[in-house]
Length: 113
Image (cartoon, rainbow, N blue to C red; front, side, top):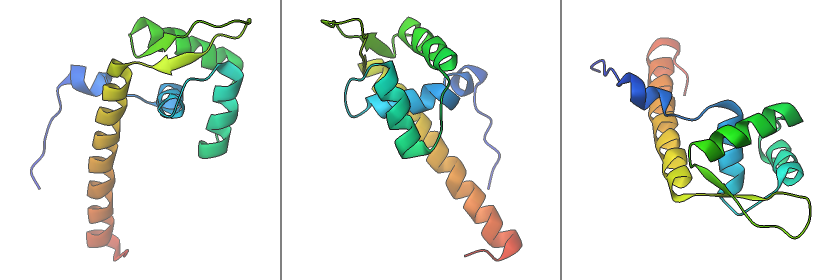
């Protein structure tokens, strides 16, 4: 397999950590902070601390990947934007490529099925 160097800007644009979990959670509908933390705990088994969550939300909103939704109470729900859906899809494609490469290497070197 040939080595394929990815442009730095493209690699830096991929999602990781809290940002990845938040966009994944919002992919099936809008949620406020507490609902996000509970959903992420449910599907990923990861607990995101409130400070980390709200810092990531601010960063994602600043990048145009999520949008705040008007609310009648003090909760501030968010939804995935079109750019956020594209970023999540690009990240998933890259992860799938890396998983395939990792599996192929394990099979070759360790006889893992």
